[in-house]
Image (spheres, rainbow, N blue to C red):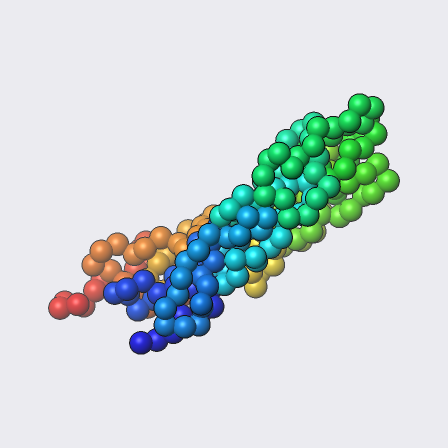
Length: 222
């Protein structure tokens, strides 16, 4: 029996590896028997993870058990703590301050607005948005790109659709993080997770298929 690549699992009856879905980790990866388990509370797993603690939840957010992405605290709340797992870790904004954006780690002075492409944890901090994140006007924290989207440059106010032939997990920021579509599947633009299985009666022996018409008809008898 073959062994699965770390971050993947091998369904019975198929020769193909499947990336671990977002919110889960494929532990014991690299062995014949792979266990799929939910990401640990206080952490999030973006997909293809072999660790239950792939990414720690940052201040301004909380991550329940099995989180595929961090959840921001609501407007009028903030959270200065790393590794939060419940919404009650978000604290009401104090009098005389403002928590004008979701995902704030600290309150700021009233009437302060951060420019697009940057995030401002305080009125004296203006930080460029990282690859894999976006920052619309008024961001107190950078927002991670969702499944099916990415940003390949910094200081972005929005995310781009994942290119066809690849799938992009949460927080994809550089071309190397966009994963080629696996064998047996095709990935149109904005794909995430594991792509789409080729229809019954067809197969795809290569990586990077972009549309259903790329799937090849099975040879008679197979």
